Image (cartoon, rainbow, N blue to C red; front, side, top):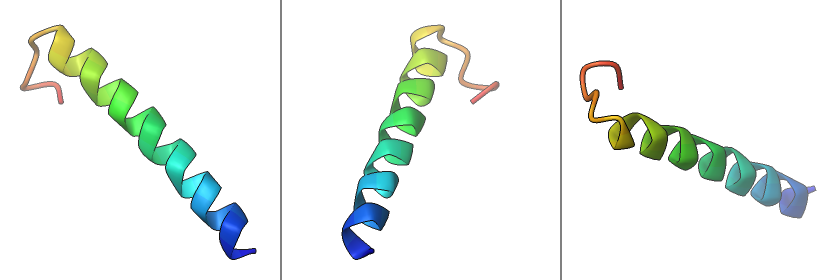
Length: 32
């Protein structure tokens, strides 16, 4: 159970990082 939670957390973190990188890449800091 704990292992599944860790994997899920890693996936969510990765998705958030990719989304943030996309926003920063556009140079639109206000939108982020």
